[in-house]
Image (cartoon, rainbow, N blue to C red; front, side):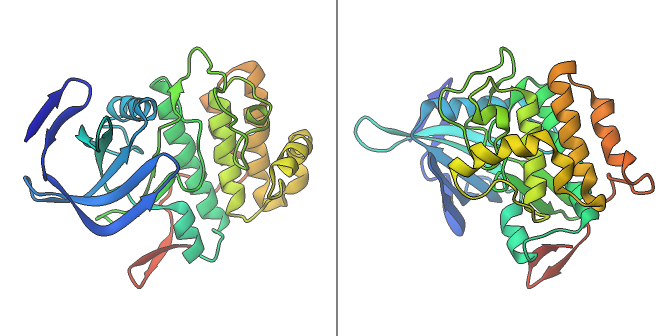
Length: 293
């Protein structure tokens, strides 16, 4: 059986078979490992959803980011029958690694300062690439950032899950409440979404692995404490981590002055001139599991 559709691609019955190595269910669908039985290709991930809008958003970003470092490789996409009047909307990507959240649990919930700097630099660079291609992510958090040790021994970073992504211009107003621990103060106030909100979420991700939690655990606490943090971010960091507050302050400033790659990325060098933020992430492997120092 073969079904062809310009939007939903080409469907071959039984081409992709689940392997059982990985399976995860989220609010809008399921992701699981598969093998391509036609090309005998393993190390693939299938993501399926019933939500056409989320699927089209994600597919648009994956197609646009093909060939760019830091993004999953789009391998295939198609729709499959899912019962009377329903379809599964599917796409296949290469396996790109494990969530930084899972890796942190194995790494005692924290990363060294040098690795925090390296991860932040790579994440900011990847988000800048996304923004240059005209998209904002709108859901940067620790389960949507992956790390993988490649064949050359280098740990590389990827971002995933573009179901909430939208074009940067015009700045999208929230069609739903996006308040969360990792959302910026401006997003929690239902302001239009900008590139600076993605970058702020990346900063909050770094704070989680210090670990530092100035916002609490409940929505009411987030809404109360984020304005306090916004007023004086340097009050929350000791000297070795003041670069995080520096990033936050620079991102806040650029909301008014406009984006400057140089001013933002200079922060990574200014606080420790002798350290190279582009140096490889240090790690070790125990029982086949990646542990970040």
